[in-house]
Image (cartoon, rainbow, N blue to C red):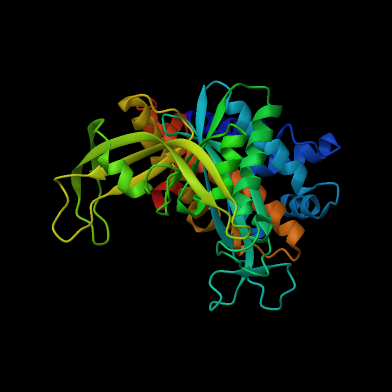
Length: 406
């Protein structure tokens, strides 16, 4: 009896999540939405990269194939509903961290009939879809959902910093950030997305766009940028270490490749800066003013290792050590989007295993599985941040078993 009640509760929980995630997707017919909710709940219990592996009955499999092949079911409609659901979850927070990062999907396409483009390095000759994803994460570190995502079959693989923004892959970072802003606006909440970018986001177009549009962002600096100082030539990486120390904090460093486990002593410095940005095409000089936070390991670096160091550019105001710490904490959440990509691609959902034959169906299926991957990540971190609850109160037995196996 107790086992039956537990199964019924797990089933109801999966259904409740699927209704919240997919119930507001606009598909023109309530029966399509009902099918989507049913698919989402079933996938959460038994996710697989293929439809035949995910759905046990012939009726479920036929329903899934019909849903994905239906021209009235568009990926745009799916994403708008999913992003809106995520934004609604964020409404209770003053702000949420929004890590954005890129990856690629490489389903087998030996005959080049599935609408794929070039992925990976030029020498690899890989085929697939490039993708940039934004996820929302609470200040407590709990993932809340996917809130922006863009796919494209890339023909040119242009990754250098030459040419117009429209010609570079980096434009998708801005495209996805704009998707997030639109989702948060339409959900009628006051929560502020705080974008988190790694070194790939350190581009003049991104910094200017964020400042002009009043976005809150943090970008890890990758360039030795010149500061706009009329009196002397100064550079970012020379200037920050000369600022007064704001404070120290301890950082637990796990063991890694060529890295010893330790508690690192981290020194923090920060100041407002104005960058001098030169357009490589026109030669025009533009300036952008923001804050920079520099955190550097001191004293505890093992012999033979480089000290841990981040240089973070941010539009968030830095008035004190607590403000700087919030910037550092936010950037530390960025790696969760990498965890999402891992779960989505191979960790649990195995989205690249699908056998669908058109890019439209592949990407609709990938979009649904992205929600399932995020729910898995969300449940994992909810359990870590809600110690008084048992795992069974947050996950079904199947979900617990899946996480243990991974």
